[in-house]
Image (cartoon, rainbow, N blue to C red; front, side, top):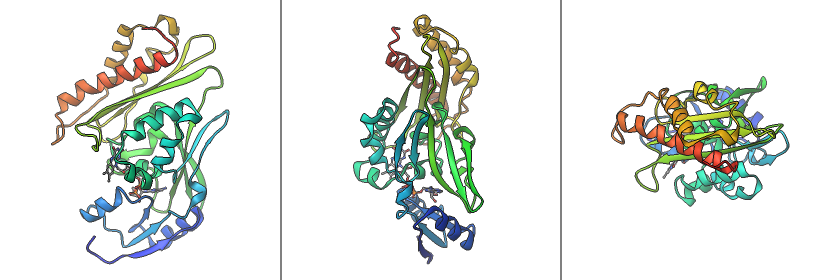
Length: 294
Ligand SMILES: Cc1cc2nc3c(=O)[nH]c(=O)nc-3n(C[C@H](O)[C@H](O)[C@H](O)COP(=O)(O)OP(=O)(O)OC[C@H]3O[C@@H](n4cnc5c(N)ncnc54)[C@H](O)[C@@H]3O)c2cc1C
């Protein structure tokens, strides 16, 4: 954080995107600041203008209706953690936040910041991909909807343009039946990002048939991956016909999509093996939450 910068405060999404447009590509949004402070200090980013959006309380919400769950970009990880008893999908997301950082960091850190930072090892992203979530991105031209899968463009790169703001994550809930989801990760220490992670979301219709399967693979490629062929291998099966062996095969198909690298934190081979296990366990957990006996 060596160079001087201008500090701006936005009170609404419209003000934030107007400030972004006014100051150009070297301006950066500041939400909780927990990722950005570190990157700024390490000179990985060097904004000339910092646009603080902590006053935009209209983006701080978690709402549920029959169509789905809406999480505002400014909802903190702490408020997501506290939402556990409002819906079983929020219970699962709450459990994820408990794995993330420390209580102090979770109070500052936002859901929007976690997604916009676009770390391949971030914890919420694989679950949102598995849950087939979409995001709402706001600009002076209005709001646009993007699938969670298309949102990630590379390490620290997203679909959010230079004069745009992430406003909301929407998790659809099924018209018929129910969705159950799970997330598993491997880390080295408690306050550490995942070495590898995986998530599954399984929808079972009122007829007892698996109608939709979502998978999210994290820290095994520059972006979060899904595995449509693995999902298809489970869709259409009766819940009562699912076996541990079947789930192991599905996880193995999904893991073939992984393109892990070796770095200081883990080897590519370890990540390759572990992502399969994370997916298998997430699938088993989702099936068990539906009452399936394996
Ligand atoms: C000690 C520590 C431990 C951590 N542990 C974990 C962990 O276990 N798992 C994990 O996933 N993360 C972890 N993190 C990373 C971080 O806390 C989270 O990613 C957090 O959710 C980021 O949110 P933020 O509001 O602080 O983002 P910021 O730092 O404010 O922003 C991050 C990026 O997103 C952009 N941005 C933020 N909001 C918006 C928006 N609405 N629209 C457009 N752009 C936006 C910013 O410009 C910046 O580029 C950890 C961080 C620390 C410091």
